[in-house]
Length: 335
Image (cartoon, rainbow, N blue to C red; front, side, top):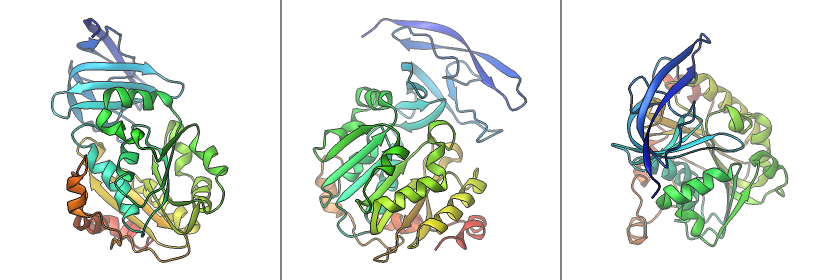
């Protein structure tokens, strides 16, 4: 292991009023590398606080035991740190992507909500998801014959394999083919009707993920799906991003002529403690997302190398129940 050193680093974050807010962060850094200037946001030394204009006026903080990795890829800043309570944490451009403790709530739901809603999925495409968690979950489905994953940032894949082997284990499955590149461009080259399911594991609609929330991308997804095929995409928080969600729902209603539904799950380390999913199907055999037709057998799951920690048939159906304020806003626009 590399020598450890203590680094004192000023951390600068741009505020909404364009003034710079500078604070000092002190913690152990594996390898003695200086933290990137925008890798940490904290008003308390030794704590990571997720500060962003996408959730103004609030921040969730985790105590940092040690920074394990920091680097800058072609697309974004990448950091891994050991937290006191959530295990190792992966951060991209200052935003938490996953923690060892609660990643199951996101990875299992974004995968099994769509795949348990159709019988015998065989070909699955994952856009994003470079950490490998989604393909790990897709592998639970024995009917699946081919898993393609298109991730734009190779550093995310490499870092995940090194620091999150229990998540990146999905890459060991022989059905998986990794494509490093732009998911939007990849989809444009996919022959019509190729996939039974497309899962879009994107970050927030800023930076490299912005195109994954726009109408042309959804049109490409619909074209790549067979009749009655399904898509599940990360769709933000009803507490923070209702305007974004309404736009996503409106776009999907125009593109997808089957079912259009919004579901959600709890993830403690995501802003507001929850995250939503947009689930849509193309015209063809009807898909009732609220009542899964392809349940993962509980006994078979328990015998597997990694039993499910979060998903089950009951929570599947419950995920589509919306709070009244959200139902009034988006419930009538979905179906």
